[in-house]
Length: 411
Ligand SMILES: [Zn+2]
Image (tube, rainbow, N blue to C red; front, side, top):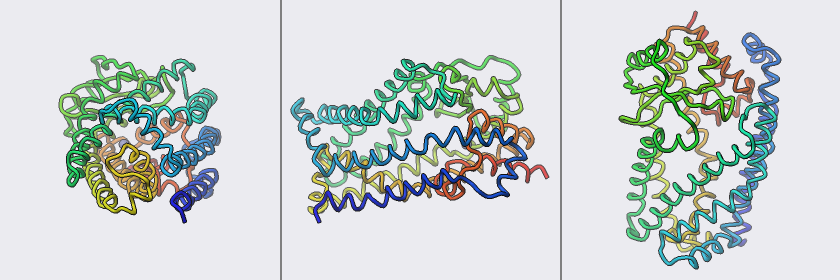
């Protein structure tokens, strides 16, 4: 069998699994006991609205996955990546500039291919379901900024990768893994001061009772947050959220203005105490550590595999060539299918830990429950998702699991 056919045969199970996932998502949680429990906290209308706001995304997202797999397959096995490489080579003889040209063309073709799905799920559905506040030009500008940033960061990483692979043909994987980790830490540092302001307007939370209370809460959790900022999310979406960001002296609490507009101070305290729990347990640093280990392991596996002539022949490229990029994305699709359940289990364990700290800091299970009911309502979340999909892929416990956890604490 030739390489394109063998690769297509290997990709087929991923697509079948994705279709099964979609069918399960449509089905949701059919257990009467879970539904009864949900109805103690949500109205039937809330439940229906959550379903109606989630279902329209399933099919377009599945089509997007299939298109992505087909696109990567065509790039690697039908020679389209080599075509992009030739164009990049004809534009410059410098390998860093060539890597940049390759990244730009690759991202533009990708964006054009996914434009119909992105516009439909991002803009049309967002407006129709009342989640998006932006008009089309605003939405387009917001996403073009995202694309610009992705190209720039992609160039930095891929240009660096190309350089290191050529300079250190045997040990590049250690250096690339180390630099990738340093890059991730730098991103966390500059995220709040350089990256987030490209997309959102921020203001400091005015001095007052709430600000004092939140900073005091962080002190009790042993987290030295320097400041509280408000992200003007209401200009973009109706989403409600809060997060901690930055390291060192860029460390701060960020609250969505939507959160302040719709929640009581007790409920805002619950959201912040949960985030403080993540910081108290150093979840960001643990995640960076896990990413560093995976990057090193991945780079090592790649360096070993691509020493083999037959692997190079199969993929029609080597690690020194720009055409390695779609191969990495395609391999990423495989690895993520198997790694996602582990990653989501770790993430859920961290969320539970943050919830436990949140409850022990606030000692207010009733506020914890009302916060999560409100969050699910305002984000129009599906409160009855399929349990198997949650176990395999959810980054957070479901809202009903969180409510049940707080109820156990109350009794
Ligand atoms: Zn969390």
